[in-house]
Image 1 (cartoon, rainbow, N blue to C red):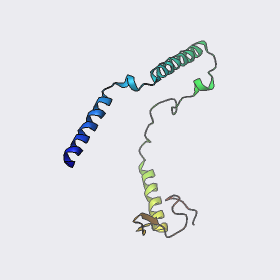
Image 2 (image 1 turned 60 degrees about the vertical axis):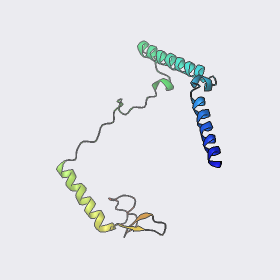
Image 3 (image 1 turned 90 degrees about the vertical axis):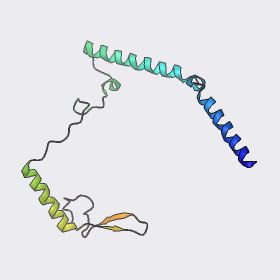
Image 4 (image 1 turned 60 degrees about the horizontal axis):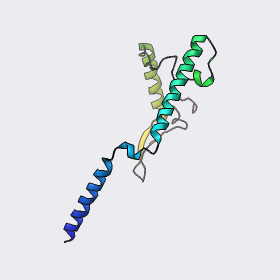
Length: 132
């Protein structure tokens, strides 16, 4: 009998949840569609004002001149490959750091892996010479 009651409870809950999801987003809007339309209208007006200022040669306001680009481009370019001389210098620096700092990985009592160094200040950078 308990099994039948549990099954009926799950079926009823499933039906109620499904019907609530089928109501459509308009029932849960709470007036935010008008806010979204007003925000879109405001953004379009701001874009038109910026274009007009640029066309007229006027200085832009701080909010108009703010852009989130690097060097005027939305694409970040990868660094150029290292030259053979730079690769050799990189390898030499890494070897010198390894020889001086001798990093070892130990596991603490909580099971976390931590890197331990033979010299102080080695954790700041592998090319750090502060300990010399």
